[in-house]
Image 1: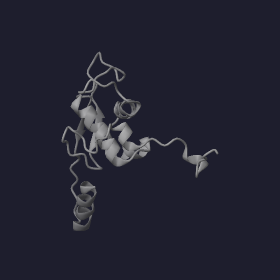
Image 2: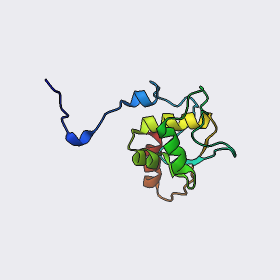
Image 3: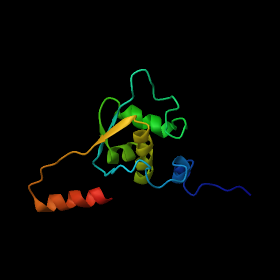
Image 4: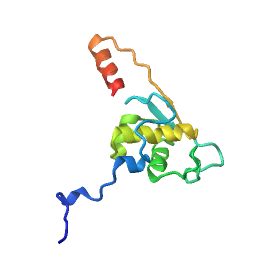
Length: 128
């Protein structure tokens, strides 16, 4: 008996906790809301493929892709999750790994919102 896919376009499935080694939160403790901007900050002489994570692990392909995407222009956490096609929680953990290794920096844009409704929306997005 052969088991088939329910959806042929689904492709292989990797559980999110496999990418994060069971972690659900970034160990760096950084506040990574959806609009936080991530910028690669690889020190001179070091490239993205070296074993640089704080726990001695080599970079996963997802870590390297985050660095590649953020090397020339900052991207928000939401853009990275969408572009990598990964759950937001997974991307937050991966960014936390890169923060701990000092390979990225995160900034929080300050928006001057004149409207109370827009401020409420922004506050709601930050809590996600």
